[in-house]
Amino acid sequence: MLSSFEGEWVKTDEEGYLVDPDRWDEQVAHELSRSEELRLEREHWEVIRFMRRYYEDHQVAADARFVVRFMADDLGYGRKARNELFRLFPYGYVKQACKIAGMKRPRAWSTG
Image (cartoon, rainbow, N blue to C red; front, side, top):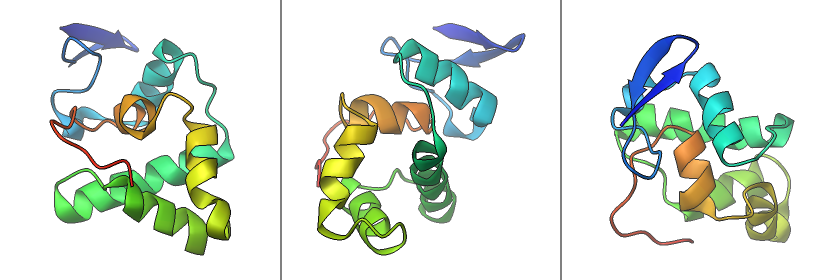
């Protein structure tokens, strides 16, 4: 499936995940968030940028537990981090956060 983002075609799978995570940029994230009916705020971007850094370092999407740990420690959510992750991405980490951050659709996943 091809999706047009600012006149550039980006290949997505049948569920709307990027086929090539390296084609991601912030404009793609905005378009993907619109398809999820989600308005990206500062907190969303902090999580998304962490996920992108993790991907660049490891060439794999971060498991939700790493994102929760980042939110708890670096963003100061402490024990509320897991709930805050699902407040930010109410349809789930894989369904929304991974998709908007430009990750491929994981086959099997721990939600952390």
